[in-house]
Amino acid sequence: MTQLALVIDLNVCVGCHACVTSCKQWNTSGAAGPLVDDQPYGADPTGTFFNRVQTFEVGEFPNTQTVHFPKSCLHCEDPPCVPVCPTGASYKRKEDGIVLVDYDKCIGCKYCSWACPYGAREIDEERKVMTKCTLCVDRITDTALPAAERKPACVLACPTHARLFGDVHDPESVVSVAIRERGGYALMPEWNTRPANHYLPRRRTELTVHAEDLVRVDNPLKIDGSRPESPQQGLGREDFAT
Image 1 (tube, rainbow, N blue to C red):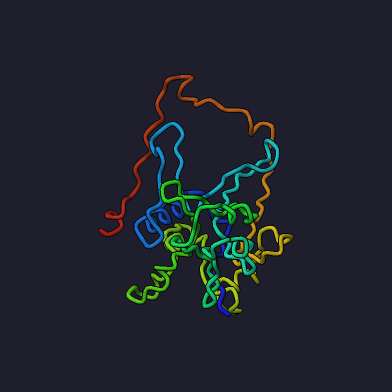
Image 2: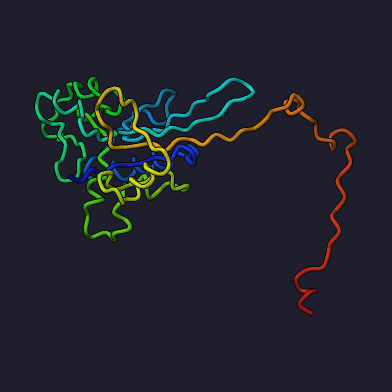
């Protein structure tokens, strides 16, 4: 059985939120939308997002690192959100393993969000239905699009190619190869939900911080007020051509 999923490379994610904004744009104007924004320019803005990026620091000063952690529905192979739904609104597609919500059946009871150990579901406060990542199912199944564009919006938007998309049950797919060769792992395996989405680990870069590195050196130009000398102009390209 096919199981479509994302593989996210934490080593190259720069936290730019391109995945967040592209996801919001595509889904709020597509079959899954509209996605509400509550007081987007207010003091306490909130809204519905299928994908979020959490940024935090690890380690102790001065040896700290910033981690950007994208998070969305993991499309578990044994999703706990499905059996708890009293109306059958939450379901898992047999043909590709995508977990979806039928808005016509959803009553907004939030049982699925309580059952999800990853906090991947959000309620749309205007429509009073539960929402989640759909892997842009309306896009990836659209045969009118070129094959190269039949990918989730977040994958196409990522400037560092930190997001991969494919069938994790196909051992030769780009996602399976990345998981196998680069130590991909699933979140919180102890819950036995068998998440389809995987993460590629960060590769630590060792950096020795010396005490003098933490002392700010003032700009010498502020001390004597002088300006740097203009660099000497060497031979230009046109000189070599003559």
